[in-house]
Length: 258
Length: 312
Image (cartoon, rainbow over all chains, first blue to last red; front, side, top):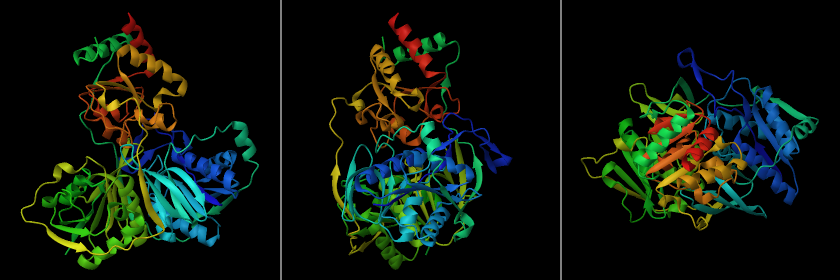
């Protein structure tokens, strides 16, 4: 089975303060570190595990600037056969445009595949839309929130989708298809610096996004803003011993601690 | 005539509460609200919409992206194309929404949590709620939206007139993707929804080796240990201890969150707790917006100090 898996380089903003620039025209990411999108890491791992059993090959594909090569090297270190970079200068905010770019790329370059994997969403824009859009544009069946792949045989896959509240649904889906992989589906393997260094000897092909047809974006960002304020917490401040004393005081007051 | 189409989510015979957010945004959009639902005998907010289309399909057939295209086509045939098509921002709502956008070439914005009527812009989270983008659709055709649970339900209310009901008699079922069965979570001896005091840990704890020290803290405070999605995904704690939309919804007396930034899906699972205390080293962590008390500090230091005081 041949699997295409999409992987994205994203800003690691978990512990970073984000500043908005030029009255909402841009977000300052100049001091923010970058990493592989968490969901894509699970998707790459799942793809590699499947071909280890069924045979075939995994190709990792990334859309972005030249720096995105690092997530391709990482994917190769995890076991993908090769990596394609679709080099795009601008950030494509509209998932529809990204979907069209991918469809056009796969068709024009005649990239063979049985299944396409994406992560459920990317950590930066959290759209969770590209997988479904490429499936629809290419006329393929689709399942998202895939938290388990139970069997792969004869052009049919049995997969489990995560719903809410701990519930899952098992669905049967015909290949070729597009699956969006949920985090937690597996335990991604550790990637060492040595492994990545070795992977960089495998050639990554670079394609220019401009060579593939897309329509005009269907949505646009008018402005970036800070989050709307909710209630906000009463902050406990002081020396650590003092703060912890106050915290225990609250626990006593609420009757959960004596 | 222009209208907003609301695609309902029904799960195991229950009209999900988050549909109220879809109904709520339709009020803000100001057009006639038409609800399309899988036909069945459940309470569905009939009085909150102007029209109902009952599609004669089982719930698993209805909210399957491979069948949704045909259902929407039939709706367009009956009523023309709407201005907006609203789905829930849930596992199945979002899945069908993005697929439908791809099929029909409609613009799509997911996880919408605000709408500015005057400027016609939709608010959407980026970077786990650290910033928001104001979006406008510029393409042709109806806009497809998925709306964040809890964001718009306050605007939903009863309408004066009775809803007009229509039916879709026949929904062709795709065999490219078929429902097999529901799979329940494995039974566990711990039920975090019953705990009065939860100590919940998140990505901020850093690695698995830190778990035992938080277990000790939970023991000395007589709290039950739970966790957010990243901790469960990494298998540092079992699934039964997950707080959030894909895990458990909890309402303890005290919810002490350590190293949890406050992803929306997590907040949705704990925001109704009596008292929320958040400890995080990132002063900008969204969880401080929802907590009653906050401490900006290194969580491991707070953990060790709390243990020390609790012992003494």
